[in-house]
Amino acid sequence: MKDIHQLFREFIVECEYARKLRPETTRGYRAVFQLFLKVMPEITDIAALTPDMLNEFFRRIETRPRKVGKQIRSGVKKSTIKTQWSKLNVFFEWLCKRNYMIESPLKHIKAPRPNYDDFRRLEDSQINKIYSSVVRCSASPLIIRRDTLMVSLLLFCGIRKGEFISLQVKDIDLIKNEITIRAETSKSKKTRVLTMHPTLILHLKDYLKERKSLKTELLIVSSKKDEGLTRHGLKHWVKSLIVRSGVRFHLHQFRHTFACKLCEANVNVFKVQKLMGHTEIAMTMRYARSMRTEDMTEDIGKISI
Image (tube, rainbow, N blue to C red; front, side, top):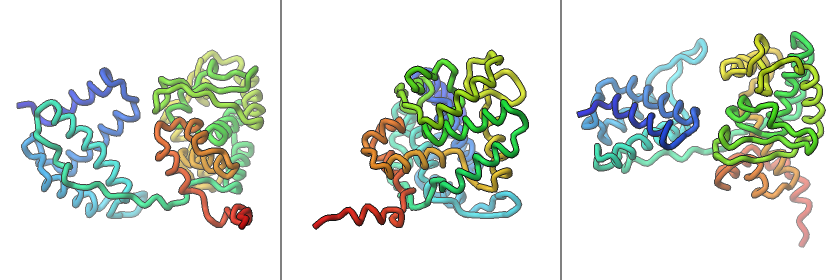
């Protein structure tokens, strides 16, 4: 009988090569599975995957102490539990299809329904601080132009992290003022073309002039080598910008901001869906949680009876 580690490796191979899932997706499966085995070391074979053991896993996740910065905390968000439930269930359903299990141990355990009521967009004042810190603190003309473009790309295109670092110079069309997000880099596996905002065009032209001597085909370059910015480099860039600007943010907040700015400009939600690259409108609606009722005073005034 194959052990659970071997079966998971087979599952990942299918995800990577047969189903052609994005690296980010398989990374997420690996991370949750590794956490599961770390928290539940007594589970070594399929027979141990029972509803009671899965309930015990969620109990341990909720109560175990963990170090966050310099503090020791316990407890996790509903959204975190939902993510872990979903990713584990994909693996369990795969086991069922391969006849290793009769049914998923999560079949009769409902995932929590997160309350997406947090405010995740960036305020205009925060965006201004981020732009200012780029100009004030960057080390060279190339890095000033690069960092300014990076902020503008995230803000005016709302693209995902994987799409962002995979952009190539050939994806830019300055004649049509368009930027192409290729299917192979997109979560939806569909190509989409975005019209560039005038501010983005300006910053893009300045950057391309500054980096014209570089040979890498990737648009966003490393600060140290003639090659593209890596995921690690992007993570370091965010941390550095937080310190320099005084604004605590994460990269995905730019995507929320992009969606909210479109909605505030009365762009049809189906158009927002296309621009965001969502396959389902329900996903687009989640981003609307960053819109506040206090910002809709003028809309209420438009009511006519």
